[in-house]
Amino acid sequence: MLVRLGAIGAVILSVVGAFGYLGGWFTPYDLTPARFIDTFEQVNGTHPGFRRNHAKGVCVSGSFESNGQGVSLSKAIVFKPGRMSVLGRFALAGGQPYAADAPHTVRSMAILFELPDGEECRTGMNTFRYLRSTPRKVFTSNCSRHVLIPGLVNPIRPR
Image (cartoon, rainbow, N blue to C red; front, top):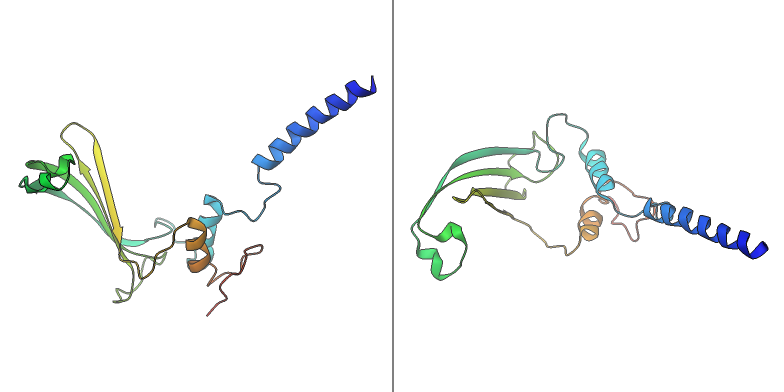
């Protein structure tokens, strides 16, 4: 009888432990999408109606006409001869929708090609002054400069 109760208790404890692990109870300082976004708002404030990052920008629409010479470099459909619709966005990095267009500000571009067969091809780029290989490193180098985050290992102190 005692063995049976022990087995039932172990199963219940395992289920509770699994929920706790998956719910993040054992790792409260892990980097999550919500924590990333919350930190953008701590750093830049809230600006209803604007994106939390790359808040200042303009959207564009038009068409892209390929002369076909790119097919020697790539098999991508966008390089085949023809015309296709595009949507795009040019923006400044950061969460300040009224930021100055200063020369040192990181800029971004995102383009969506609407392909003839109904598929979409998306591309984008930023003019980074540095590169980070993981979201944690981006978070640590950018966000922790402004906000001290509990549990973050070796945060970069405010300037």
